[in-house]
Length: 392
Image (tube, rainbow, N blue to C red; front, side, top):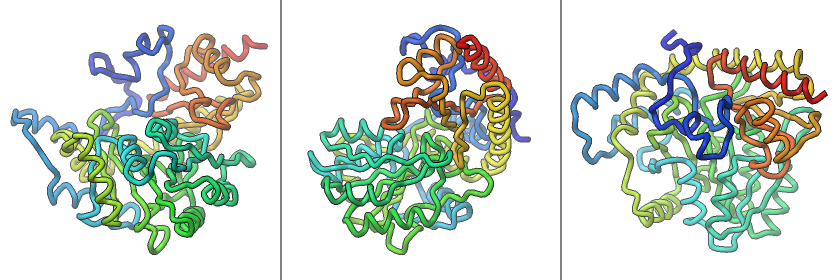
């Protein structure tokens, strides 16, 4: 293996949000941090070698993407997803959350409706509310342990609540769905009929489990690219979030110009050198590392699923189809909202993401990040088991 994912990496003195800022967030000491979505694994060797090379050169001036960078990104999406983005579609942002905010500002007016599907990644709601738009929620439906979209509800709300923009999470964070081609076509047909632009957050696209295939939204229908923004980044895939590098793909020139104008209005001028270099190096040389990582993450998931079933049956794991984030149904604990959050922190010693922050339908849930060495996941499960047994 290129990396030994069982190794516990010392992340101290790296400005690590996940592990070093507990006091800032008012958290108790000695929690196992399995919350924010970065990984506790070393990134691909191709990335560290490329960044080391740049450091040896010792010049960190202004930079911009070139043809080599574009070809690396294009090749990744072509060979892995059968989708070939074009040079003029590429627009950079320092992150997908930034991109979502730009889309809200550029493509809607104050008071317009923006559709989301809760429980969903909480910065979506903030992007809408902080920019003076109206949140329109079409909740996902949990049916036999699997979440589904409610298409009739979605279309009715689009029509009745002046929805101009839909923020799609694909694969979905936190419930772990990998939307099928048929589901995405239905979404696209509704949005096309209703004149709604789709912002598709596909940052977790590289993490799909066996039997599930990620479909780029723009490829799900013949003209879907003409009313969509595809948001991608190497950050989740290769553990590069701190380098703040995202690539948007916007086929429609009118939409692309509006987004570019909004970005310029913020004063943001472009990606940093290290982010550009890391992204290209990862897309060119990180594929073997990724496939090995996915095998390891599958082992983590299977371990946790078995452990919960055998030792903590009160907590149910919603089987994810993608991402390395797992949605835990804690309904049988008889706690919800803040009480559940406090239990996880004060009794189980775990720092997870409370389900309430993801909106409607999340009150009885917790999101856990399994991208850590298995020994860490095992310790977390053992602490959870002890805490639950003490409740009896």
